[in-house]
Amino acid sequence: MRYGVSGSGFGNHGSGGGLGDEWGARAARSRALAVLRVRGRALGAAVLPAAVAVVLYAGEVTGHFTGTGWTTARWIVTVLAVLVLLAAGAVALVVARARPAVTPTVELSETAAPDLHRLVRELADRLDVPAPSAIALTPDCDSWLEDRSHPAYGAAAVPAGTAPVLVIGSPFLWWMRVGELRAVLAPVVAGTGPAADPDIAAARRFVRGLDAAAAVPRDPGLGPLRGLGARGVGRVARLLLRACGSHPAEMERGVAVAGSERAQAVDHGARIVAQEQVGLAYAGWDRLLTRVALPAWRMGRWPARLDAGVVAALTELSRRDRLAEGFSSRLGDRPACDLLEEPGAVDEAASLLAARLFHGGPAEPGPDWAPVEWSRYPEEVVDRTWRADAARLHEVLDRLATAPVPGGPGDGAPEGPTLTRVLTHLTAPPGTGGTLGTDGTDGTGGTSGTGSTLDTAGTESTGGPAEPGPRDLAPTADELPVVPLDLPAVPLEEDADDPYDDEDEARNPVADALAAALSAQVAREDAEREARLAATAGDRSGFTGPDGPWPLGPLLPPRTGRDLLADHVTALVCCAAVDTTGAVPGLDWLDGPALLVGGERAADLGPRVLALVEEGDPAPLRAWLSTTGVRPEKPVRLL
Image (tube, rainbow, N blue to C red; front, top):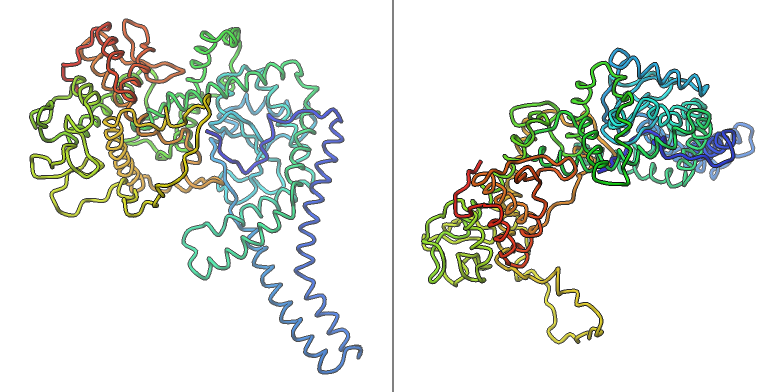
């Protein structure tokens, strides 16, 4: 879930090296001078041909370099000098004007957070360093200083030569107390002292310009000629970055050491406790995004109080985990969010930014991208997610089983949306029950009774050209490599485990076929949604990161076919439980959507669904249905 930033993000990770602030500042300055020497050598190499040409012309004037040979040499060197100077000027212009990676943040003016600005200024005075020029929030668990003197920051840019901007992780403001926040920010604010050093500031600007210039060839719409020039500039920038070596990183490490040592005099005891809260906040924030926020984003809803949810998630963690005992007792102290004039509005802005960063949602709310309060989350997110997944599962089943099979279940008409239908399908032997064959048949060697065939993605075809789908990219049998049949067998040791026994063996081919069709359906829906967002989202390039456009970093890897099928079967079971028993959808702050049976979370449902999906064993799930009173033969309400 972490994204790259253009600032010097060493605030919370610096630790004192025991050599003092003077050593850290000297080390940073020496590394900065090493970077500037690389810049000086590059400049010297650029003007060297011009200097040689000047010497040759001076020799002609003084009568030392005369003759045809010297004249030819002067012309050759002059032309070379002009070409080198033009190339160097182009590189310097691109480096100076290249747009650096811009960190997306929520700006906090002094009118929006006067107490927070006052706290930071008092902290800077105690540390005897310049105060940051501005304060901004980021939906992440980190804090750093960022130079925003480049015009690419637009309205958020600060004048050149001013102090950097202090960027604070928004979860810190809601989970930490005021004293803990001051202790965490102390080493970060102390970094404004080394940042004011002219050599360090110049080295940072040079490295940041090279980093931005190296990314110029990836800009769209350059054209053939400009693209060729951009590639040349990119190569020169990467060459200079390699020449800098480890000096930029060591320079930032020295700045961090200097700031950490200087901050030792400020709330040293509180810093130890505050660093523990940093790790705890990171764990709670990551869990909240991946388990709670992501399902809402997929349904076109974004939780409007993510930072407040961190407090609920970490309080629940302290209740469950004995290692976190005592953390919730801190909640009686003044929270750092009290330093804001309107915490709710700031939390909403940070929550919307988090949705853009980690999911790629639109920049503004709309009919298909609406905020949701935590009190409405079970109804608007959990219930709708379950019913949408159940509807998709039955839609795929309708395409997979459109004709009766002799001796198999079904009468050729689509069955009702019941749990029994899914149980029967997943426990049917391969080749029966209307399952899909790899050749487009119904699994019995014939086509469907309606005169249409089914492709491997579960879509109908009437003989005409089929619409291309995601599974059409899979290689055909003729494109697969030929494997010799006479390869020697490699004997396994007696105690060695067969690597193909568990994960790679298709223990439930029926489930694999259904999972493939379901994955194709989800891929089509995702592509359609992305197309709609691209057409209606407007300008989504206001902020970009080093890793590309929105989203900067997906929270989770793509789900496998079996994981997707297990999620859909679980959703159908939950819908059946809600419709036929007194179960209700709920929210677990650490695990996300939950089914509440008798007021208690049904935590034992997942392993029973996996037994059905992976092994075709319905007994554990049927036992659970019988115990909870769920009637699988009753149709469920779909979205």
